[in-house]
Image (cartoon, rainbow, N blue to C red; front, side, top):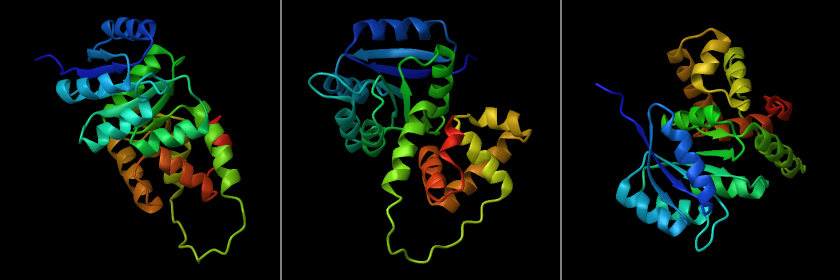
Length: 225
């Protein structure tokens, strides 16, 4: 029996980009483009009717941009994982995208094989943020959180040394399988560490974990290099 393919919807106002992505996925196993849309409004209609697994969503589009489309899809109960694939690298766009409900954020110049890895990772429930963007975001995040305030006593975070190792690799955009190989541990162990990290940091995804780890001074923004 053949492996079930990941169903992909491309939402981008550039016809050249849509054709390029469709051509790229034709040569990749386990992926199938089930539709294309030239703006967020059409993208919503297609997403609700075709029920893709992953949506590649641009940000800057006419009629309705990708962030508004993402918000509306979430409000309408879409279960599709949304991967922002864009040339926008301002930290406000990144924050707005994740606040709207995006799962991952990639730049358009990402290598095809890496894009495929991010799609699979996003499909499997992980969040991914382009390391170049992560560094910019976290540098600004650090500036906005550095103003002295009266703080309530904080509970000590008790991450193990191995969990911190995993956090370093998450910050660099490693997938679960890459973390497994790098640390010579099983996939189940990786998943357990990540689950424990999320619980201890009180976050829901990798991006939030990395950002909170920087805020708590568990890792440095240099880890995103």
